[in-house]
Length: 256
Image (cartoon, rainbow, N blue to C red; front, side, top):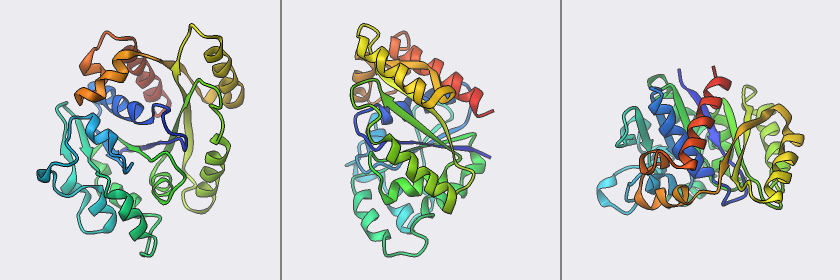
């Protein structure tokens, strides 16, 4: 049965989607059957894997799954990479979030959808929106682990406390098995003292929950999504690719 990991930070621009896309790529390269669930209405994980969100041939997406008009197994599509599947989304998911507020079981819709397919995977990774929304709560309730990417920049930890409070609330009321898998420092620039200071602050705050691997600021990481591929497929020798490969190994150890 799959280990379910949600990737979230209420702050945008921290490398959340980049982390989800590339983590799944390297998990699949390590021969783990992996599903990436794009649960962010921006749909960047979908487009980052070369899927046109506006293509009429795309068919049903996570919007229909959450509204209950399509089954999870019917919307999953294979990517170009062996053992790497995607549950795509479009901007319509934002409207669906409004619709489900008045529906029954509004907090467990994603959990029920993932439960219907999790026997087919080793890992399910959920890319959540950068907000503390109903979609985010659905993601936390559906998951075994929460992965928190934090940029090594000023104000990095701002808002993290609120997110962790929400996580504690979810654990208390709906999903006692949820736990913080770890904190991943992103956009790390070893040339600046600020990055080092913020990373030290992250380690001081989260202690052994901080991953040893840091994700650097890297041109190849920024370019890869525009080509619709993970960085490992775009330039496997880049610093960004090596960092995500190393991080994935760390994560595999933590989830054994």
